[in-house]
Image 1 (spheres, rainbow, N blue to C red):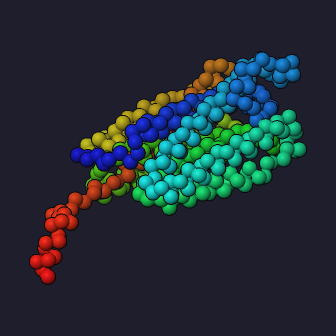
Image 2 (image 1 turned 45 degrees about the vertical axis):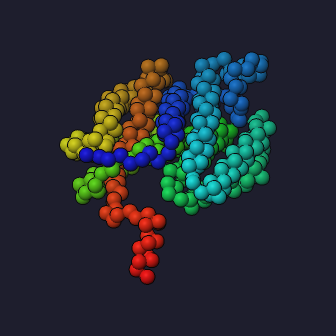
Image 3 (image 1 turned 180 degrees about the vertical axis):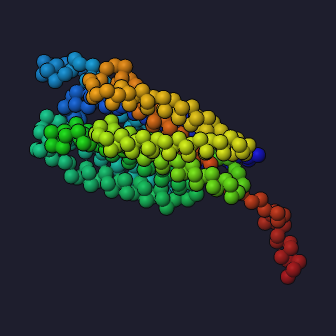
Length: 386
């Protein structure tokens, strides 16, 4: 049996964290469409406003693929990125606001304010140079330094706060990661003429880091279930952690295959898939065999089982579509298969991480057996003893 602890944050904040995960999953889906259909350079201009795609196209913009489907995929990805950024800002404010000490809370929120404002200034400085060649771009130094100072203050105030600081540090790191990911996506476009498409792979992998942080935050803001830390529970948790790390490595190999199709990453991707499947079967069997563990993490275990079966089938289809006979031009069907395979892989990564977090043993608070004596009752006793 499990005994739920009090919720670490208000319920609305936990629901908002879940919303952040869902919207980020949509962002990943569009980003994987960008990769599948080669739309990463459909628009070579960056930065752009969120509403840029809805403006009437000029003749010059039409000449730069404004009317193509790839243009709308790319800009849908940018709009989704702006949306995730706004949601995570609200999430970070809400999480940092849970700090009970006014001084630490004020310092953390002040750091967040400085970070967001400076990031906006940095972005505006780059936008003023959106038509400048990559070699001639000057990074706005002052906003960048101020943003780093704000980020440091926010994280430090969250880290040295009172109880529950782990959730607040996660919220701060998630916000910073989302901002870094936005810049990686922009620099992938801006620096294409200098470094080619190499940044696209880093952008894709770091997206999974952001997704993992937001998933972690969603699980951490849920009401924890108390379970006595037994040796079996600790062992199962350790294997769940190993499995989550292995899935993340598999995601990296998958990005390598998508961006740099060569024999070596294909072999590593296949071998890791076999190993991950074997560990997953053992782990799921152990979770379903223990009633207490199943009560804590059964939902995540079922989700993992379904996603893993779907992922294996999609992996076979994606491999046949891309490497079965020869490298062929992507079709709508093969592009959709590759996109779904990558998206389900992100789902497996998120669920494996959530499962490992949910299986973490949490000790029950030890109730005191001493009678509670009020301050008023203690005074006569002291007088009698005197």
